[in-house]
Image (cartoon, rainbow, N blue to C red; front, side):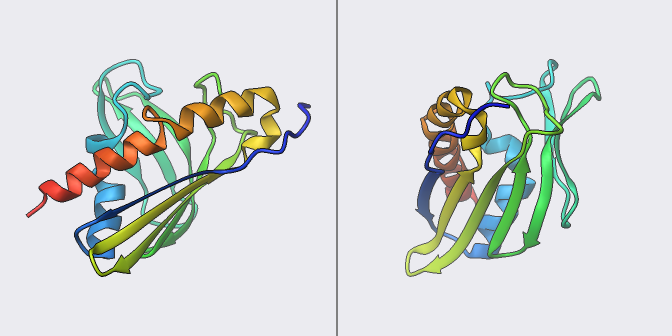
Length: 158
């Protein structure tokens, strides 16, 4: 067992045009369009990423060869304002049944459209590996970059 290290959650936000419902839908239904193309678990090119639309549902990706790789589970499904996913990917990039951190996404209406707040928590249980994973998730190749790509997808919608 690795010792817990005090570690703040990764928090990123963006404001985009569009309603919370539109943004929520694009977050879950168009994940392949905004996800970092270098961050996949399947070896073949990724055909699609899936977030099943109910609490307890799977969060996974499917390669062009039909193979699937789990990322986690849907913990809370509350469209159009809140989504919580368990993240079960280890710092080594493998699915870990016993490894669980959480990704919470809030979609709030604001004058400009929708504010999207994402928080990835629970990395402190990984010890030093959690520090490295947090650094990766907080950067441009992690959640900050992903929300930027999501904002571009939302902006391109009619």
